[in-house]
Amino acid sequence: MWLAGALLSFQVASHFANEVIDNSLLQLADSLARQVHVEDDKVVARYPEATHLLLDAPQDDQLLYAISGPDGQKILGNFSFPTSPEPRQTPGSEPAYRNLMQLPSPVRMVSVYYPLDKTGQGQTRWIHVEAARSLASRNHLSRQIMLTIALPLGGLLVVMSFLVWLGINRGLRPLNGLQRLVEKRTPQDQAPFELSHAPQELHALAKALTQLLSTTHESVARQRRFIADAAHQLRTPLAGLKSQTELAMRETEPEQLRARLHMVHTSATRSIHLVNQLLTLARSEPGTQSGMPRVKVDLARLIRDLTAESVPRALAAGMDLGCDTALTEAVIEGNSALLRELFVNLVENAIKYIPRGGNITVRLTEDDTRYVVEVEDSGSGIPDDDKPRVFERFYRREQTGNGCGLGMAIVKEIAERHGGSVTLLDAKPHGLIVHVELPKEQRRLPA
Image (cartoon, rainbow, N blue to C red):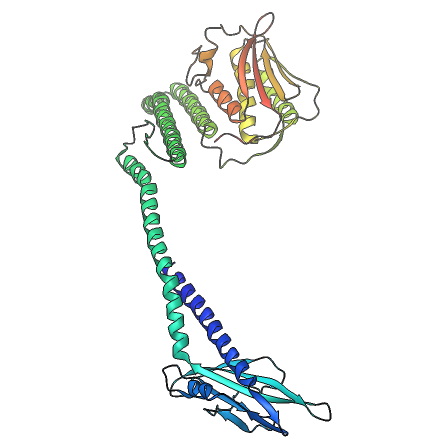
C-alpha cells in the first residue's frame, strides 16, 4: 500500500503539472498570435518593447517562441525549433504538445496553427506559433503537488498500518490462547474449552473442537470396549477348543476319538459364529458407515426372500414359518447387507429359542412416514424386566443353544444406523413381537 500510494501521488502530481504547464503554453501562443497582423499584404508582428524585453530576458525559466508566416518563413522568435519526427501537423488541427529532450535544457513545447486571413480565392492563410518553457518548472511543480499529496497520504498510511497491526494482534490473541489450551490438553480431558473475551467466531470454533474431541473419545472408547468384549468372549471357546483338541490327541479308541472330534467341530462352529457376530456388530457401529455402500433396498422383496430361505431350517426345527405382507414394494435407502443381517438375526433367534411346534410370522406394514416390520412368535415371551437387557451385548437369558448374546444388540445398532428403532412387545395369547420401524424418507446414515 505504501508503494501504491507513492505511485498514485506521482501520477496525480505529473498529470496536474502537465495540465498547468500546457495551459500556460497555450495561453502564451494565443497572446503571440494576436499580435500578428497583415499590413500592405505583408505579415508583420508588432509587440511593445516591454513585451520583447520580458520574453527575451535571461531567467531560469526562459520562454522560447517562434512565429512563422503562411509561407513558412520565420517572422519573429528567439529560438528555432527542430522538426518533429512525428507526422507533420496540418493547419486547423488541435494543438500538439511534446517534450524536446535533445536540447541542453529539456523543454515542453506547444505547436499551434492560427487563421490569419482569406485570399481572393477564398482560401485561409495560417500562421504557425511554437512556444516552449523548461521542463524544470514542470518538475518543480510536480514535486510541489506530490509533496502536498504525499505528506497527508503518508501519514494516513502510517496510522492505518499501525491500526492494522494492532487489530491483527488483538484479533489473534484469543486464537493463540486457544492454541495453548489445545497443546496443554491431555487425551483424557474432555472439559469444554473456556475462552474469555473472545469473538463469537472463536467460540464457535472452540465448541466444534470440543464436539470433535468428545466424538473421538467416544469412538476410541467404543473400540476399546469392543476389543475387550471380543477378547473376553473368544477366550473361553478358544480355550475349550484347545482342551478338546488335546484330549482328542490322547484318545486311542476310534469311537472316543470320533466323539472328541465332534465336540471340537461344535466348539469351532460356535467360535466361527461368535466371530461373525462380532464382525457384524463392528460394521454396524457408529463411525463405520462412511465407507459402506448405500443403495435403494426393497424391504418387501428382502423379507419375502429371507423368509423363503429360512423355511427349511424352520421345518427342521418343527416350526411353522410364514410371511404376511400386502405390499408389493417398500423401497428405502440404506445398506443392503446390514438390513439383511438385521432380519436374519430376528428370524434365526425365533427359530432358535421357541419350542418345537411353534409358529413364526414375519409381517410388513406401512403408514405415512415409516415401514413397520414385525417378527411374531408363539413362544413363552420375555418378562418386562428383561426386555431392556436383551439389547445389551453378550446378555443371554438362557444358556442353552449356541448363541453368543449379540443378535439383538446387532439388530438395535443396525436399526438405529438407518434412523429407525426396535422394541419388544407381548403377543396374544403368549409369545413375543419384535417391532422394527424404518423411516420411508431418504436420509443420510448417521456418522
